[in-house]
Image (cartoon, rainbow, N blue to C red; front, side):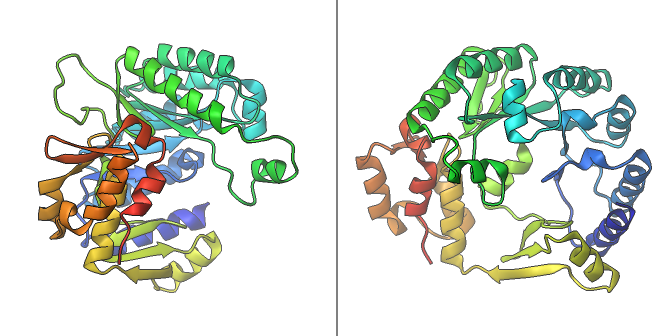
Length: 352
């Protein structure tokens, strides 16, 4: 871990003059496993790079790895948002997912983060987990809503190769129930709306004040919105992906290879590509469809140089005819039904 921290700090220093970030996000794993001393070294490097005074600074963590001294250290160094991977409050489901925390740890961790001064919390949930009934999902939603976090991210379970869940699925240990997954999604959207959360992206909901009128809630995750709208981002650390000046790249996922490259003063790259203008615009359109407000037509043309309704006329018509999308107030957006098929809808717009 010390070797990894040293490599990350060196990579931060290498890019300090190349980026002036508006948001910082430590995630894609469990950064809270690092010790207080290791975090102090990282924060010193971020401060030297001028990357701590940002609009939104998020750290992800597992409920089993959150302590008051660590949460306080984060707040003292400018971290103003915390994202916690809850996934479920049901003990058998947590075990099936291979999670190491208990439901009690979730409640304790939320209390710790509040005591440390965090007023912007996100909780991650999963639905359609094998063995998860509608009653269990409904109860989980009620308990999570009672915690009054500012943000919720709710994802349908994904079966990725080389995971225990995938192996169980392949072995016939359970069947995928698509109809129940849809019912769980609908229950989630309605239940969260009734409790004051606004859906602004397929899987993301932010608690909004009664006087908010903007189509993007104040507590929406700004870092992720940058991804969905085709913005640039600098990716640091093992397996990190970046997109700068039209060049897309990914670092080595293997931590040893990543450290070796950094220590040898090489970029730790495991490939990359440069998108042509049409391909870049296509990706921006596809990802923007994930958001409830959809694609702002004028903003899209200003940003990409392409007119959506001209370049993708046939594809837009197909989506509308299918009942998946609609034109509304200068935007092209998915309907509630279309949001359930957002990946397929976005694929329709990919060109180049």
